[in-house]
Length: 216
Image 1 (cartoon, one colour):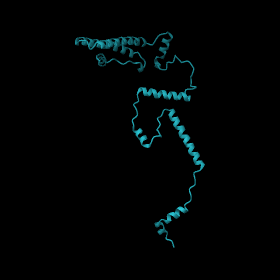
Image 2: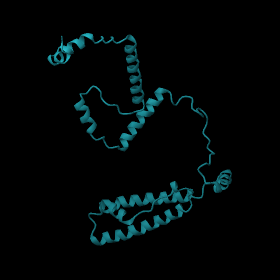
Image 3: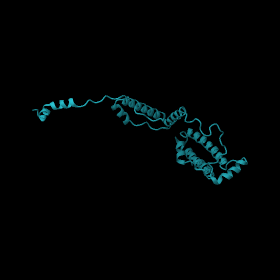
């Protein structure tokens, strides 16, 4: 009479269990087909991600190298790199036809659009436009631009001969610089009081910063 516990200790029981264990069925063609569909779906997702400009992991590298690449810092987002990424995405969108058949395509621009003008000033602007008059800040802005251009030419000339100037001459140039900055800042104050939005405002000149430009 066989003792099952003794047979299992000797290793015979495991052989009997393996002999009576049912055979595993072979993978069906349906499973293989589903695997192929999954691969195609993954490939389409990767292609869509490339068109969107997303950075994809490199699956061809060994796991160790992939981990090392992931630990590397991304390059700084400079203005040139932003422009390059934007151009790539725009070009990909053009190739995909995302800019085709847009609303208003081929139609002339509305040059009389005053949506950026404050509502309480639109009537006055329309009256001035009907009389071929410009906005009230146009002439002050032109005056400011003329004065600023003259100042920049003066600053460049003084910078060229600053090192050869005597201490007394440098003191006189510093005083002249303060007067020129004060005159331009007065024009800026007048201009900023007339413009309707903050985007049209002009920043004031700072004496210390202008003096640094003059001396270096």
